[in-house]
Image (cartoon, rainbow, N blue to C red; front, side, top):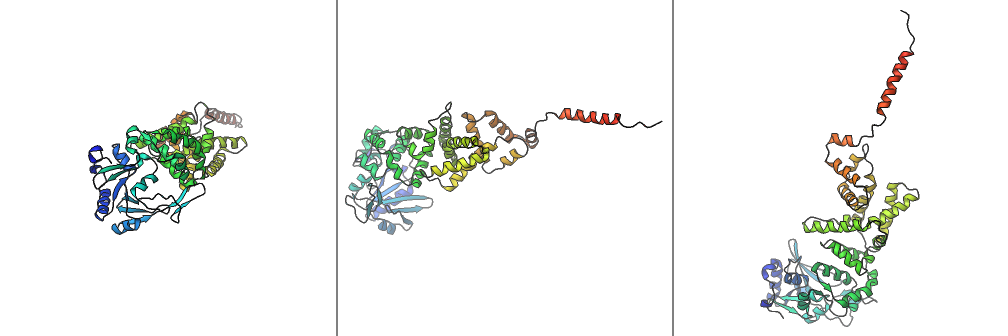
Length: 432
């Protein structure tokens, strides 16, 4: 137990609504702690994204204490206490669950499907994943309670699983992805035993529903550390599970492409998040899968398909295969298709096609993707420069830029004049 004088967490750093929940539970006679990532981040001097509370009150008791409370979850019942847009999540201490009963269900591989076994704080700590996520801030005396050496690992910058890594990954293989995400985000090293278990257990992720893997992929790549996360995932063989077609395409690089495009897209995403700008998932995912689409479209064109149709068919096939690994929502896959389908259309710069293309709802995303390709060797930079000038030009200049070549007009005019002259010379002369 670390007293208030032995740690740097202050109530001034904690959400007012989280404090309300903690004090209200304490007033009603229950134990109340902050736990998990919020305690970890407060110790690092970071602002937590959210605040999670744990208590010995069961979900129904929590609901009786707070009128603004809603119970959620099947695998493990949770209470959400609503304060406008902010939600404070309240969980009940989980029990050891050593013996399976009607409240705890595992599948044949040992993965937890439902887990509503309640217990004490001493039991709860062993059900958490990493030692640095198993620190409890007690509102009663402002101490930090540590059962598993989390404070020592925190100071050492070590991410360590609680218990046997092999068993913990069998319980929930997604913990392998969480390990990478936390290690990169916190700048921590992975415990060697954890690393060894990841190398051995990668195949367990194949049994995880693709919808859940999509959610994890979004957390991995839209958290501001996408580039480093990508490299670490590849190191452990985890990226292959999430994006098999992309991993295969990375083995056939040409002058650094497509890896350069993917790396640049990841860098851009991280920079935008650092600047407080929004990042769209579909654009980054379009960059992930562009090379598989391009390779397949090229093969289809070699068989006689026209370019636009080849890209449409290739997009359909690549997405159909990808959703078996990570279930892309329909609105995401549709947006990706539109960005891809615009790429061949940028080659048309004559007549009315450019003005129609610039009015497309996804033009900006398609144009940004064109710039990305030009910057990484995937298309002639002159094409991207032309579209940049075209957008900034006025109407008259745009009309000039899209006019067909004027070759041969002078010779035609000359032939026309000579025709009239010949006709005039051959006309019958009248007698004077």
